[in-house]
Length: 110
Image (tube, rainbow, N blue to C red; front, side):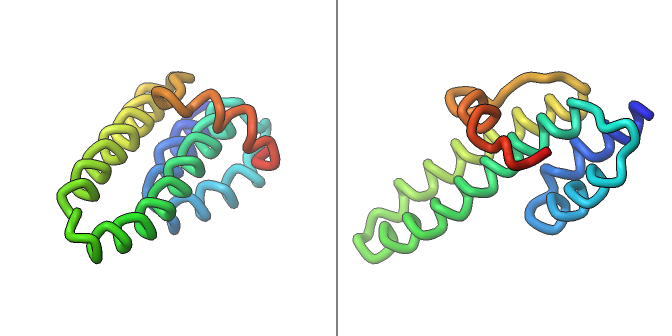
């Protein structure tokens, strides 16, 4: 059912809990569609970037460079929003700059 695939794709962008729920739903999806797999990989990459940024932001805070952290957050938010909009529209549009890398390297997400 295409509607379930769209739901999984959208839900995968709802932070960590949404990603886990979407991943479980993907395992039970019959037949498994490429749209849900594609967006699980894209959103997993965004989650890893958010995790890495949290560490970098902590360091920047102690160096009194918090404004750089804020600019990075804004950029990450834009990438997340592009991915979410692509999922809502049911498109296979990779996240700019890094989406293709996510697709090639997160092959463990099936």
